[in-house]
Length: 290
Image 1: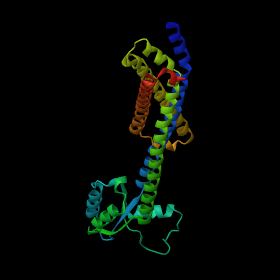
Image 2 (image 1 turned 120 degrees about the vertical axis):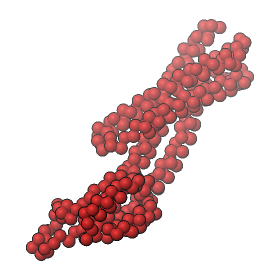
Image 3 (image 1 turned 90 degrees about the vertical axis):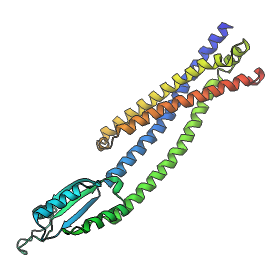
Image 4 (image 1 turned 90 degrees about the horizontal axis):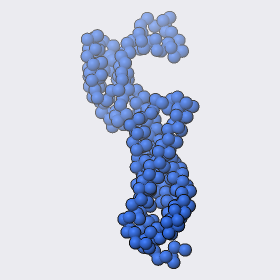
């Protein structure tokens, strides 16, 4: 009886290996989608935080009032970064864009001074920008406030559409992943059905039979998750070497959460599927195992 148990355990080892490999591949695909979702969100945030608002100052504003207005804008919670563009600096930027000099035509610099600032991503909405512009235009030193309204509307619509599509794909893929992992583990446990039944026939309790297999499932799920995480890290490193711009969007907090989630998911699904399979074969009659 002991020899039969040992030979059965040996025969089950390849199925465990294939189970770990199969679960790793499925978790890798899920992790890959998670990485794409994270980068999509960071990319949307990057575009939002590059939306620029320009506050044009009046011609007769005093230096003291200009400094006060700059400080007023700088203290606002929606400002990510700002720049005070004097009339001379505005002229230099105008010339740097390849425009002709007007010295031979005009005696004075017609370009106004301005305060250019970029917003934090949570404020890049039409309603927020409209409220910001209304507030700034009430300042006596402000002549006009301009921002790309159509660009903001299109950007938010596109980000929402992309987020919705990725969410739907993620939900569908999660369901597929759970089903595939469950089927993979059930196939692995199928090769152990006679070993499970044999242990029951010699008087072993359900807990005694299930405990070592549940522990094996936890270890297998852990290994599968670690392999998947290692594959994702290798892919990220390769992608960042090919596209160095991706490093700027790297979010270690979300990547750590993604890696931990993949490992936990691998362990939980492996444990639940294994335990369910053990109980199923314990309840079956011997003749039904064939």
